[in-house]
Image (cartoon, rainbow, N blue to C red; front, side, top):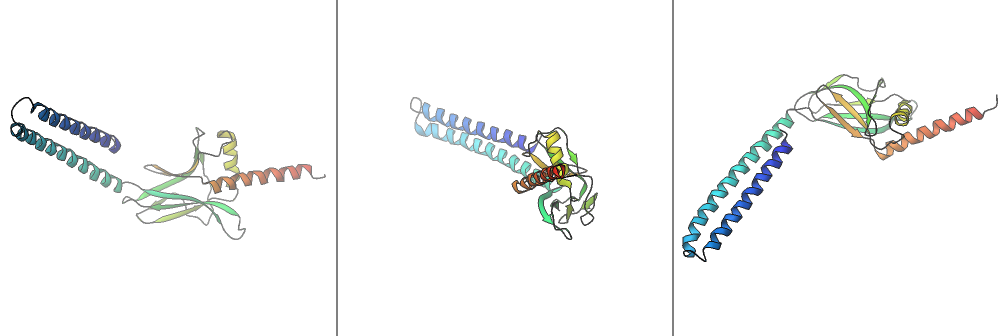
Length: 216
């Protein structure tokens, strides 16, 4: 059972306990007008309140224990923060895509591959080649270590083809995925990167038309 499910169950139990406590107090004070004096009803009611408070405290203790255990579990797993950005690099100084990764978990992360996926598609595009200036895959990142993966020039054309053929032409939902031996971490394509891809596609189409219209 996940932490989210446990949290929902504990919150539901706490709400039920508070509701029953309120009902018991209401019944106790309601019957005091017909039976016995207020003092005769007050002490038993206070005893009930004490028991319910103890029960709520026990639930809170369980809640805290599960929360601490879940935090410890997260610390002992892979935790990779990735960022997708546009950079330029000598000698051509043309804009290219770069993936930056930082290991933030206590467990070393074994990075295996990069892929591009879209919520509008059922298949992902594997990033086959990286620039020689970038970090190499696979790579192991201990806590606090980072790596930068520079995609080769021209990758934008492959991404545009992927969007056209497998995503219905929709750029929304694109994300870069970093795959490890234990999980997957991703970063969405920003508006600036999507505009860069569209500009690349438009420039390619324009060049193709110019070449087709050029005199023989």
